[in-house]
Length: 318
Image 1 (cartoon, rainbow, N blue to C red):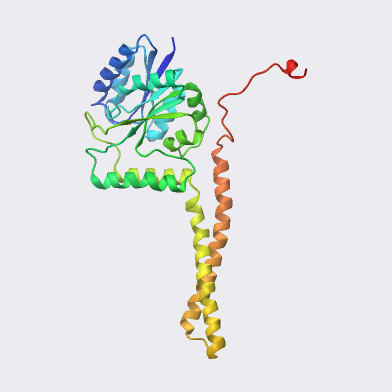
Image 2 (tube, rainbow, N blue to C red):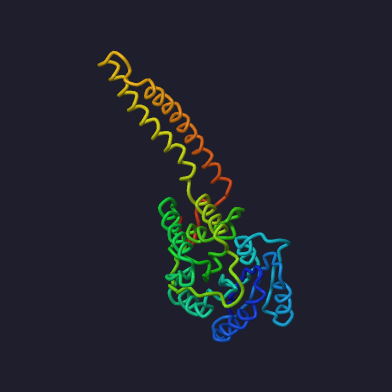
């Protein structure tokens, strides 16, 4: 029988884990004739009794495995560790707080088996219960990211998704340290089906994502998948140079017609803008080279092969 690995990143989830474990067991019972389950809990340096509870589950249930970090390395590291330790033919990534309805795993699995998808992911279409300001910035992030990046990110995309082993192996092959997994999911380019879901409040405990941490996460996402921040210097350089050139032309024309410069201050500002624009332009050129080096350091694969045709070499020569 095929195996489904359930990867669960955990950080101070002691209160919610009993509810999650009960619910995921209910799902595994419903799918018992389709596929076997294993659970991979990743303790991301929790300060409560999360690890102790996971160890208790592992002692009672042979399907339970776990990875424990020495400190809090962040959710991205926990996701990578969980995927790396998974053994399943299929892998589902899900949070422990039950904001991702485990019932959707059944639909996700059926979509992959029957629809031929490589990945099935959840996308939130409502943000009920979220502060208005947080919801506004979240929507703005997706719009900005998709405009300045070549990687498409569905609005409301969550980490909750079920993937084939092939897709998981490709993601694991991307060894970059600063990871934005949602972007990586889109970058690898496998055939993904999106399932819409409503926002659900946590069943227990508190969210670990503050506004500041989400803001830093958004900045990291943009830096990881867009070269625009580096290009800003070059854009400013061109803009300043054009403005200063037009201004100097006007000043010179005034000198030729009036016999003197109309304003010495305007002339000085134009010269300063010209020099500053040329400096920004040179910095922009350097930024392009730095950006290329930055992308090379990530060691992302040049291409990703999904299938290849096989043929007999001897026959091909006839």
